[in-house]
Length: 270
Length: 369
Image: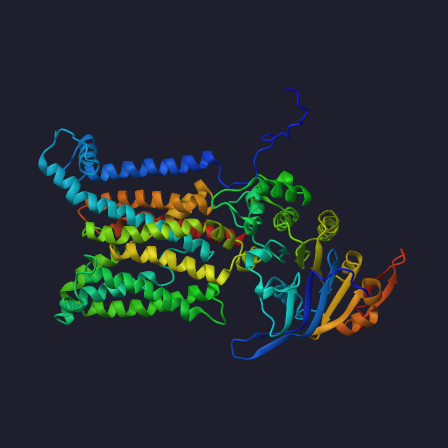
């Protein structure tokens, strides 16, 4: 694969271990390398504990690697000022408890914090960005509602709008579909795909559903056993053999009828 | 005049950003100023010797603003209002405002609705300091002279209470810190454990205190009876400083409500920010506790009530807490004086504890659903 432009984010030879309270270490990533080109849409897969969320935290500077380097726009993440990085990298978390009492517009405005230029007020630029974020996340009609009045799907749209208000170049999604039903999962991923085009976003999405990942992301990266088990186009990478090796479950490939294929879980008869 | 510039419909759509509306801000803060002013005048006028509200205002205008008003009142009225009641009323305002503001900060910082300014050890540390200051000289004669009873015109009790509160929170923070992080739950539990140890020492000292027991008890309940200009001069600058620095950090306080991880991805240096906010709120708490004792419930109740009315945005919540906390304690202290000079902490507990129960019930309902 030829990389046309410089990588927006790069992970090179990174190892990371969590320090345990008893003084021990639990190694999660060992010599992991990964590059995200501008505008790419990448799905990140792997079993529980394979280091997917850890990788996202390394990219946002919440964790620092024990070895190797993590860089954004050519500069090590550790050297970025926190607010400067937050103006360019946003995270859509697994779960976010929206604090009570705030209106949706106020919550979305919190996404403007890294851009804040006025001590107590907001700028016309904030107004424009918040409105655009609400429109793009399909949440404008929720602007005056309170967080505790929202349904699960509506909350998710508000959280997307908060991330968009940051006007990031890189959007990291940490299993954003975990608490959503199927219809909302699909709706969210469609929104993200549409926004990637509209806002020229680069997206790295941790996903747990293999078929959803294959349908969503042109490129998938599979983490397993501390390293990168596979990295490439979803159709080539996500084979029954790989799934069997990485997740330890047996699957069969089904013809999806559109030239693609679905992986069906084989629960066996025993 | 027919320039064909199509004017964008500015103002056609309601503004989305900017936080609490100007109307709400004006109403809340305006009401706070009015209520506080009324409470102060009432507390100055009412007492064992009544002074007419008009005379009270005139005395204040003459003494504070230097207005050449004719004296229509007796000289003793002026002494009572200005020399006796004013320091006490201003102290009550300062203490109430400081506690409510710190309570609002700790509730956001710990994301715990039952947090108050004392929760991570301030009260226990200040109590130990104060009790040492009260009991120490009776146990070790000459201690009071040795340590000197004049630091900025403060007594030994106030100095030790102030230092005790700050030092305890620093200790709790250091103990709770593991691997460069200070998780909220660890901080709360450490504060609880350290407070328990210090409370045991306080209890031991009380057991040994003999004739000083009444003074110790009065301090622990919180009392404004010994308020003085010197104490005000000590606490006021510290409170103003803490308030200004905390208010300037309103945006980060709001972001911390989203949780540590999300605040970090929005550009907050979470660990450093939590330490800064803790120390600023503790500075304010220790300063006011040093001059009043551990008055309960103001710091818990006021921010909660105001969130219902003013909303959770700290831009408005912090100044509103300051004003209404001040007004509440001025009125509570007036009540304490009227029922025969009981410690004001008893009055705030009588008002605050039932409200605390109400909060607890609401929290349980919220967990259950």
